[in-house]
Length: 262
Image (cartoon, rainbow, N blue to C red; front, side, top):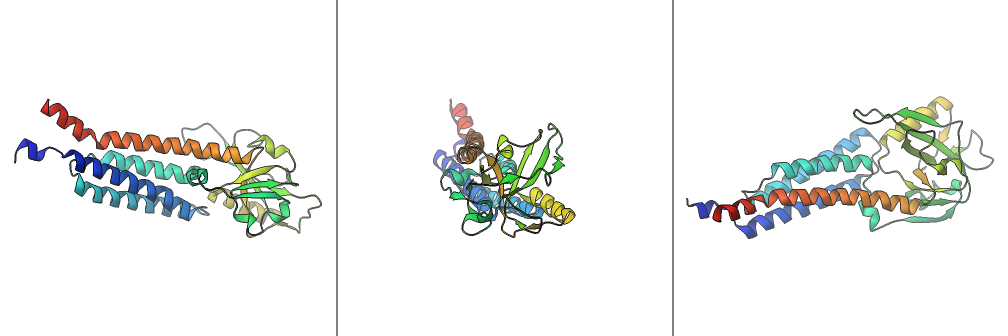
Protein backbone atom coordinates (compact mmCIF):
# COMPACT_ATOMS: atom_id res chain seq x y z
CA UNK A 1 0.00 0.00 0.00
CA UNK A 2 1.42 3.43 -0.92
CA UNK A 3 1.97 6.24 1.54
CA UNK A 4 -0.81 8.23 -0.14
CA UNK A 5 -3.28 5.38 0.40
CA UNK A 6 -2.25 5.16 4.06
CA UNK A 7 -2.57 8.89 4.65
CA UNK A 8 -5.81 10.12 6.19
CA UNK A 9 -8.33 11.65 3.82
CA UNK A 10 -9.22 15.16 5.05
CA UNK A 11 -12.98 15.06 4.48
CA UNK A 12 -13.45 11.70 6.19
CA UNK A 13 -11.25 12.73 9.10
CA UNK A 14 -13.19 15.96 9.57
CA UNK A 15 -16.56 14.21 9.16
CA UNK A 16 -15.66 11.51 11.67
CA UNK A 17 -14.38 14.06 14.18
CA UNK A 18 -17.48 16.23 13.94
CA UNK A 19 -19.77 13.21 14.18
CA UNK A 20 -18.06 12.06 17.35
CA UNK A 21 -18.14 15.52 18.96
CA UNK A 22 -21.80 16.12 18.08
CA UNK A 23 -23.02 12.69 19.17
CA UNK A 24 -20.99 12.65 22.40
CA UNK A 25 -22.06 16.19 23.32
CA UNK A 26 -25.73 15.38 22.79
CA UNK A 27 -25.36 12.19 24.83
CA UNK A 28 -23.62 13.79 27.81
CA UNK A 29 -25.97 16.76 28.05
CA UNK A 30 -29.11 14.81 27.13
CA UNK A 31 -28.60 11.82 29.42
CA UNK A 32 -27.86 13.99 32.43
CA UNK A 33 -30.82 16.26 31.69
CA UNK A 34 -33.15 13.26 31.42
CA UNK A 35 -31.95 11.55 34.61
CA UNK A 36 -31.45 14.50 36.97
CA UNK A 37 -32.01 15.08 39.79
CA UNK A 38 -29.87 12.18 40.96
CA UNK A 39 -31.41 11.07 44.25
CA UNK A 40 -28.79 8.41 45.01
CA UNK A 41 -25.14 7.76 44.32
CA UNK A 42 -26.20 4.70 42.35
CA UNK A 43 -28.37 6.83 40.10
CA UNK A 44 -25.48 9.20 39.47
CA UNK A 45 -23.20 6.28 38.62
CA UNK A 46 -25.82 4.89 36.23
CA UNK A 47 -26.05 8.24 34.46
CA UNK A 48 -22.28 8.36 34.08
CA UNK A 49 -22.19 4.76 32.85
CA UNK A 50 -24.79 5.54 30.17
CA UNK A 51 -22.71 8.54 29.10
CA UNK A 52 -19.61 6.33 28.82
CA UNK A 53 -21.47 3.81 26.68
CA UNK A 54 -22.82 6.55 24.41
CA UNK A 55 -19.38 8.16 24.02
CA UNK A 56 -17.77 4.80 23.28
CA UNK A 57 -20.41 3.96 20.67
CA UNK A 58 -19.99 7.40 19.09
CA UNK A 59 -16.23 6.89 18.89
CA UNK A 60 -16.69 3.44 17.36
CA UNK A 61 -19.03 4.70 14.65
CA UNK A 62 -16.91 7.77 13.89
CA UNK A 63 -13.73 5.67 13.75
CA UNK A 64 -15.16 3.82 10.73
CA UNK A 65 -15.07 7.12 8.85
CA UNK A 66 -11.67 8.11 10.19
CA UNK A 67 -9.74 5.05 11.38
CA UNK A 68 -6.53 7.11 11.62
CA UNK A 69 -8.00 9.39 14.29
CA UNK A 70 -6.52 9.58 17.80
CA UNK A 71 -9.72 8.55 19.61
CA UNK A 72 -8.37 7.50 22.99
CA UNK A 73 -7.72 10.93 24.52
CA UNK A 74 -11.01 12.54 23.36
CA UNK A 75 -12.96 9.60 24.80
CA UNK A 76 -11.11 10.03 28.11
CA UNK A 77 -11.82 13.78 28.11
CA UNK A 78 -15.53 13.21 27.54
CA UNK A 79 -15.60 10.50 30.20
CA UNK A 80 -14.04 12.83 32.78
CA UNK A 81 -16.24 15.76 31.83
CA UNK A 82 -19.44 13.69 31.96
CA UNK A 83 -18.54 12.57 35.49
CA UNK A 84 -17.81 16.09 36.75
CA UNK A 85 -20.80 17.53 34.87
CA UNK A 86 -23.16 15.11 36.61
CA UNK A 87 -21.71 16.01 40.01
CA UNK A 88 -21.69 19.81 39.71
CA UNK A 89 -25.24 20.17 38.45
CA UNK A 90 -25.72 19.86 34.69
CA UNK A 91 -26.91 23.43 34.20
CA UNK A 92 -26.18 23.90 30.49
CA UNK A 93 -29.79 23.24 29.33
CA UNK A 94 -31.00 25.91 31.77
CA UNK A 95 -29.24 28.55 29.68
CA UNK A 96 -31.84 27.85 26.99
CA UNK A 97 -34.92 26.76 28.91
CA UNK A 98 -35.58 28.14 32.41
CA UNK A 99 -38.70 27.56 34.50
CA UNK A 100 -39.23 30.38 36.98
CA UNK A 101 -41.93 30.79 39.63
CA UNK A 102 -43.89 33.92 40.47
CA UNK A 103 -43.66 35.18 44.05
CA UNK A 104 -44.67 32.23 46.27
CA UNK A 105 -45.18 31.42 49.91
CA UNK A 106 -42.92 28.69 51.30
CA UNK A 107 -45.95 26.43 51.75
CA UNK A 108 -46.57 26.51 47.98
CA UNK A 109 -43.04 25.36 47.11
CA UNK A 110 -43.89 21.63 47.23
CA UNK A 111 -47.07 22.01 45.15
CA UNK A 112 -47.28 21.41 41.38
CA UNK A 113 -46.30 23.03 39.12
CA UNK A 114 -43.99 25.11 41.30
CA UNK A 115 -42.13 22.11 42.76
CA UNK A 116 -40.43 21.39 39.42
CA UNK A 117 -39.29 24.96 38.69
CA UNK A 118 -35.65 25.91 38.20
CA UNK A 119 -35.77 29.33 39.90
CA UNK A 120 -37.87 30.16 42.98
CA UNK A 121 -38.98 33.46 44.50
CA UNK A 122 -40.51 33.58 48.00
CA UNK A 123 -42.44 36.19 49.93
CA UNK A 124 -41.79 34.58 53.32
CA UNK A 125 -39.75 31.90 55.04
CA UNK A 126 -36.50 31.85 56.96
CA UNK A 127 -33.74 29.24 57.26
CA UNK A 128 -34.00 27.33 60.54
CA UNK A 129 -30.78 27.48 62.57
CA UNK A 130 -32.10 24.84 64.94
CA UNK A 131 -32.33 22.22 62.20
CA UNK A 132 -29.24 23.29 60.29
CA UNK A 133 -27.17 20.17 59.59
CA UNK A 134 -23.70 19.90 58.06
CA UNK A 135 -21.51 17.13 56.74
CA UNK A 136 -17.83 17.37 55.91
CA UNK A 137 -16.97 17.23 52.22
CA UNK A 138 -15.09 13.95 51.74
CA UNK A 139 -12.86 14.89 48.81
CA UNK A 140 -9.11 14.54 48.70
CA UNK A 141 -6.79 17.28 47.44
CA UNK A 142 -9.39 20.01 48.08
CA UNK A 143 -9.77 22.61 50.80
CA UNK A 144 -11.90 21.52 53.73
CA UNK A 145 -15.58 22.33 53.36
CA UNK A 146 -19.05 21.25 54.40
CA UNK A 147 -22.38 20.34 52.88
CA UNK A 148 -25.16 22.42 54.46
CA UNK A 149 -28.84 21.49 54.77
CA UNK A 150 -31.64 23.35 56.59
CA UNK A 151 -35.42 23.71 56.25
CA UNK A 152 -36.89 27.03 55.16
CA UNK A 153 -39.83 27.60 57.49
CA UNK A 154 -42.80 30.00 57.31
CA UNK A 155 -44.03 32.08 60.24
CA UNK A 156 -45.98 29.99 62.73
CA UNK A 157 -44.51 26.67 61.61
CA UNK A 158 -44.89 23.79 64.10
CA UNK A 159 -42.80 20.63 64.35
CA UNK A 160 -45.82 18.55 63.31
CA UNK A 161 -46.12 20.54 60.05
CA UNK A 162 -44.44 19.14 56.92
CA UNK A 163 -41.33 20.90 55.67
CA UNK A 164 -42.04 22.14 52.14
CA UNK A 165 -38.66 23.66 51.22
CA UNK A 166 -35.01 22.83 51.93
CA UNK A 167 -32.00 25.10 51.58
CA UNK A 168 -28.79 23.32 50.60
CA UNK A 169 -25.28 24.35 49.68
CA UNK A 170 -21.58 23.72 50.01
CA UNK A 171 -19.27 26.15 51.82
CA UNK A 172 -16.45 26.54 54.31
CA UNK A 173 -18.18 29.21 56.40
CA UNK A 174 -21.28 29.34 58.57
CA UNK A 175 -23.66 29.56 55.59
CA UNK A 176 -23.27 28.91 51.85
CA UNK A 177 -24.56 32.42 51.01
CA UNK A 178 -25.83 35.64 52.63
CA UNK A 179 -29.35 34.75 51.51
CA UNK A 180 -29.43 32.15 54.32
CA UNK A 181 -29.61 35.03 56.79
CA UNK A 182 -32.57 36.75 55.13
CA UNK A 183 -36.30 36.15 55.12
CA UNK A 184 -38.28 35.92 51.89
CA UNK A 185 -35.33 35.16 49.66
CA UNK A 186 -35.14 33.08 46.49
CA UNK A 187 -33.04 30.30 45.05
CA UNK A 188 -32.46 27.83 42.26
CA UNK A 189 -33.01 24.10 42.23
CA UNK A 190 -30.12 21.86 43.23
CA UNK A 191 -29.98 19.12 40.60
CA UNK A 192 -27.14 16.97 41.93
CA UNK A 193 -28.81 16.32 45.28
CA UNK A 194 -28.05 12.73 46.33
CA UNK A 195 -25.83 13.73 49.28
CA UNK A 196 -28.24 16.40 50.45
CA UNK A 197 -31.19 14.01 50.36
CA UNK A 198 -29.27 11.51 52.48
CA UNK A 199 -28.56 14.26 55.00
CA UNK A 200 -32.23 15.28 55.04
CA UNK A 201 -33.39 11.70 55.60
CA UNK A 202 -30.95 11.27 58.49
CA UNK A 203 -31.80 14.64 60.05
CA UNK A 204 -35.56 14.23 59.72
CA UNK A 205 -35.38 10.78 61.33
CA UNK A 206 -33.28 12.05 64.25
CA UNK A 207 -35.43 15.12 64.86
CA UNK A 208 -38.80 13.40 64.25
CA UNK A 209 -39.76 15.88 61.54
CA UNK A 210 -41.81 15.42 58.38
CA UNK A 211 -40.60 16.43 54.92
CA UNK A 212 -43.16 16.91 52.15
CA UNK A 213 -42.59 14.30 49.40
CA UNK A 214 -42.07 16.93 46.69
CA UNK A 215 -40.23 19.53 48.78
CA UNK A 216 -37.63 21.18 46.48
CA UNK A 217 -33.96 21.46 47.41
CA UNK A 218 -32.63 24.89 46.46
CA UNK A 219 -29.49 26.98 46.61
CA UNK A 220 -30.53 30.25 48.22
CA UNK A 221 -29.30 33.37 46.44
CA UNK A 222 -30.23 37.06 46.36
CA UNK A 223 -30.38 36.86 42.55
CA UNK A 224 -31.05 33.17 41.86
CA UNK A 225 -31.68 33.58 38.14
CA UNK A 226 -28.28 35.16 37.52
CA UNK A 227 -26.53 32.75 39.91
CA UNK A 228 -27.97 29.80 37.99
CA UNK A 229 -27.02 31.25 34.63
CA UNK A 230 -23.51 31.98 35.90
CA UNK A 231 -23.13 28.32 36.90
CA UNK A 232 -24.47 27.26 33.50
CA UNK A 233 -22.07 29.56 31.64
CA UNK A 234 -19.11 28.19 33.59
CA UNK A 235 -20.08 24.61 32.71
CA UNK A 236 -20.61 25.61 29.08
CA UNK A 237 -17.16 27.16 28.79
CA UNK A 238 -15.61 24.05 30.34
CA UNK A 239 -17.52 21.98 27.78
CA UNK A 240 -16.30 24.22 24.96
CA UNK A 241 -12.76 23.64 26.22
CA UNK A 242 -13.25 19.86 26.09
CA UNK A 243 -14.64 20.14 22.55
CA UNK A 244 -11.77 22.35 21.37
CA UNK A 245 -9.04 20.14 22.79
CA UNK A 246 -10.73 17.01 21.44
CA UNK A 247 -11.07 18.55 17.98
CA UNK A 248 -7.37 19.49 17.90
CA UNK A 249 -6.39 15.94 18.88
CA UNK A 250 -8.70 14.39 16.29
CA UNK A 251 -7.36 16.58 13.49
CA UNK A 252 -3.68 15.93 14.27
CA UNK A 253 -3.44 13.25 11.54
CA UNK A 254 -4.15 15.96 8.97
CA UNK A 255 -1.35 18.11 10.37
CA UNK A 256 1.05 15.18 10.29
CA UNK A 257 0.04 14.45 6.69
CA UNK A 258 0.70 18.07 5.69
CA UNK A 259 4.15 18.02 7.26
CA UNK A 260 4.92 14.66 5.66
CA UNK A 261 3.96 15.99 2.22
CA UNK A 262 5.99 19.15 2.77
